Image 1: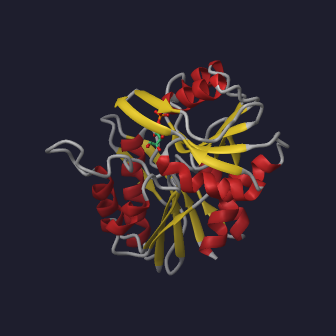
Image 2: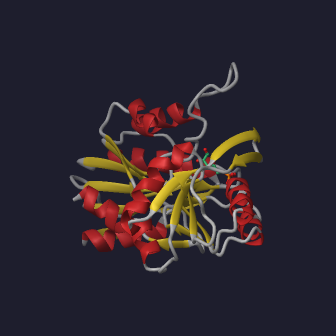
Image 3: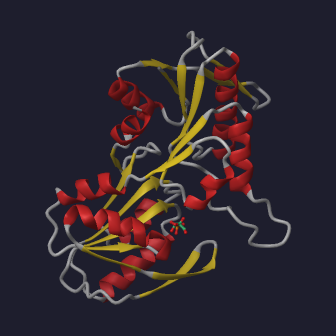
Length: 288
Ligand code: R5P
């Protein structure tokens, strides 16, 4: 087996190769002066199981094209089996036609990965599990929530309450809470515009308790900031936020910290200073 590190996922690819005890290949990736992407896999992959690791985080389009070229090249160079490991699967939030005429981007990206020659797909906490049904190849969505829960257990929180940022994150909160034997719930969230959300308090009493807000993605931070505001009003003690994918655009982290969130805990599906939990053992286990 050989692990091929896409440029968005070098750190995780290295950790994965180490966990699997196999060779790590660092492809040559460059931009042509006209912005096109150049890719070269400098080591032999003929007859091998090649695992191409590439998150399609920002710059999303460049990373997506690089993923496509790496998969196509690995296959073309004679790899026996090509696994597309896309730890953060970008475009997943546009999984429906919300307005007439819109692209169903998540589905289109699934087609692209398959068309590139991937024999199987692995991802982590994809925004909606339903997206996996777009694949005809075997496709697996792993969850980092237990790993996050185990990390949180070491923080020795007081009467912890684990709250999904919205109903979609209730199952995630449940998995995290199981690791701490904690109570869990979710926030009722209504999105007004792409950057503005209104969050209603839910039934759990959080007064004087340590609370963790759980989400799959933290992007602009708007969801977490609003949740933190509600929790402060309810006199929560310490507030944490945890997610799988620290998209964290612009000054999101600053906004979150200014809202009173003590710490953001995330994984290395996207390389960021908040990525304190590695999903390498989870993925290595799945590949084995
Ligand atoms: C949306 O449904 C997702 O699960 C996240 O809640 C959302 O992407 C977070 O975005 P933001 O940080 O911009 O509020």
